[in-house]
Image 1 (cartoon, helix red, strand yellow):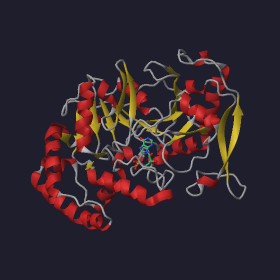
Image 2 (image 1 turned 135 degrees about the horizontal axis):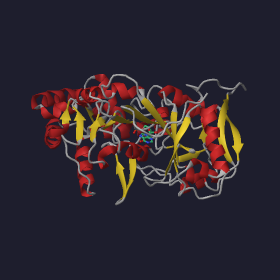
Image 3 (image 1 turned 120 degrees about the vertical axis):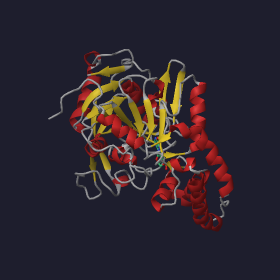
Image 4 (image 1 turned 135 degrees about the vertical axis):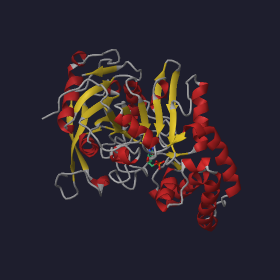
Length: 433
Ligand code: IMP
C-alpha cells in the first residue's frame, strides 16, 4: 500500500536526499522548502557538490553554502560531516555577495568547529591518485574530498575550530606535514610547507571566525525549541561510501544515516524526501544499468542540459531505474519522492523504466547487488510517451494522460508516493499533490 500523499510542508526536521548518483535537482527543492525553514543544514560532502538555484537575477550555483542562503530569515549551517576548504568558502561567500545575496557569518551562516578542513594538498593527492589509477579511475571531482575524509579517519586531519587556535593549528600542521611529506616526497609530489599553510589557514580562519561554532549544539537547541530544520543532502544515496556503488562512490555518508552523524542531531522522527529525476544520470565512472549509450541518451543530455555544475562534465544519461530508486528509498527511509525534470521527457516516445535486474546466472536479483552491477541485464517496461509542453501545468490532473500514467507507474514500482513534480527550472514550475 502506498503511504498517503502529503502536500509539501515542513515537519520539524525534514531531510532531503538525492536518490541516485547526485544531480537530481535538490537545490531547487531545498530552495522551495527553505521558505518555511528556520535552519538549512548541509551534513556531508564538500565543494564537490553543486546545487543550482534559479534566481530572478539568473542561475546561481552553490558548492558549500547551504541552499537556504537566498531566504533572509534562514540560518544556514555547514555541519560537522562536511569537509570544508576554507579558502574556497571565503571565495564562495564573496561570490554570493557579489550576486547581491546577504551572507553574514555568525548570523545566517554557521560552520561546525568539528568539520574537517580540505587543504590544497588533498586536491593534489586526489588528482594524483586518479591519474595513478588509470583505467580504474573513479572520476572524482578532483577537489580533494576523498583524501580529506581519509585524513579524518587517520586522525591527522585539521578541524575548522583549529583555525581559531594558533597553537593547536601549528601543532596539527606539523604533525600532518610530517606524516604526509614522507609519502608525498616518495611519490614525487611537492612537500607541504607548514609555515605557508599556517598563514593561509589563519587568514581564512579570521574571516570565518564569527561563523565557526558548536553547530551541533546550536542545532540540538533549535530542535528542542521546535524550530524547523531542513537537512540538505549532497550527492546521492548511490554515491554513499557504504551503501552506494562502491568503489565508484564519494567518501561521505550521502544517505540519511549521514544526517545524524554529520550534524549531531539525534535520530528523532524525521520526514525524509527523496529526489529523483524522471530519468537517470550519473557523472564519473561506475556501473549504471539503465544507461543509454545511443542517440536517445544524447538527446536526453541536450534536452535536460545534463552537464555537471561543478566540473562541467557531460553527464551519462539513462532511463528511470525503479530497482535502484526502490533500494535507495528503503535505505534512506524516504516514503515520499519528488520527481524532477518531468518536462524534459517531452517527445521521448515510448518511455522505458527499469523494473528488474537479470543476473549473469539468468535469475532475477531480489536485492540491489553489492557486486557485479556492471553485468546485470536490466529488464524494461515500455510506456507511452507524451508530446505536450508541461512547463505551465500546475495541477496533476491537468498533465497529459501518458505523463500521469508514467508517474503512477513510478509510484507502484518504487513504493514511494510522488508528492511533488518539477516541470521546469523556475521556482514556481512545480506540481504539488
Ligand atoms: P569525489 O566526491 O570528488 O571524490 O567524487 C567521487 C564520485 O562522486 C565521482 O563519480 C563524482 O563524479 C561523484 N560526485 C561527487 N559529488 C557529486 C555531485 O555533487 N553530483 C554528482 N556526482 C558527484
